[in-house]
Length: 305
Image (cartoon, rainbow, N blue to C red; front, side, top):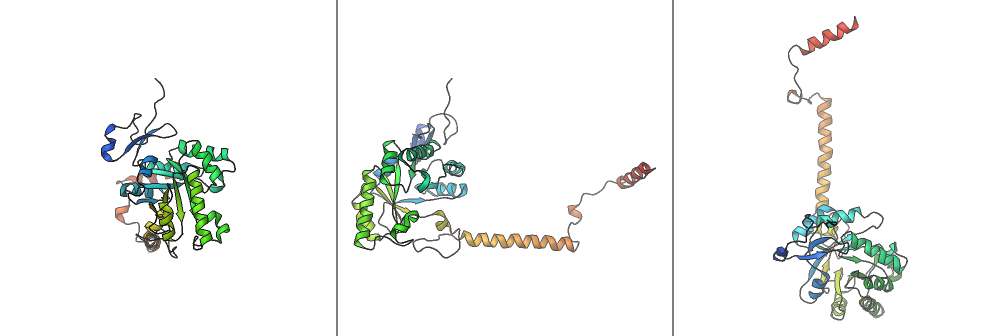
């Protein structure tokens, strides 16, 4: 028998069942040759443009990824380090049915060939697409190789020196036209989507109408096809200050602080009871069988003679 490909979704080595559709899932094979199921394919996502607003987040742990899938987040992005892919693989496995783009570092590719190779590596280990800050020529090389690409426009933090730092972009005519030109160049390069960061809402509304790309809005209001927010912000993993465009739906930071105080108090109580002789008590101690200590001591004394 030949090699059997294992399914991310079922682990049974077979094509996923045809009834996957009843669960709202599509049967797929990854670029790495692995069977699985997904809530969306690239075609499905493109077909949703103008019909409904999708949700997107970046989980930073397997627990967050699993929770996002269980909650029904439409698409995920995960940070991908080509030299250390273990975290991305773990997050992929934690949300096996959710469309996921691996975010490739800006400086991970210095040539078109490197961009294709890194994209293929991401796809090989389970990515459904890659998200990049690469230039249009690198994106075109990747898409021509069959790699779905989400580009990045507006405020691109790692390129922020060109736009005046970490601040809103697109508040002047020149900047607005530049953003539009960027997005059209990504469209012409074959990308399927673009993350648009911290630009005026009204500008994104008009751009979204004029591009075939899915626009993923982060800090750009309701003008996009996808509403994107980091899991850290949604869950309130960190304390203030918060960026203006974020919203904390939970306060896990407070819970973590409270847990830390509980840890400290637990250690303090342990120290106190040890010092005052309150621990261990009788219920924590193994009782000695009758006569054991007497026989033990006798044997020791006999051994000395």
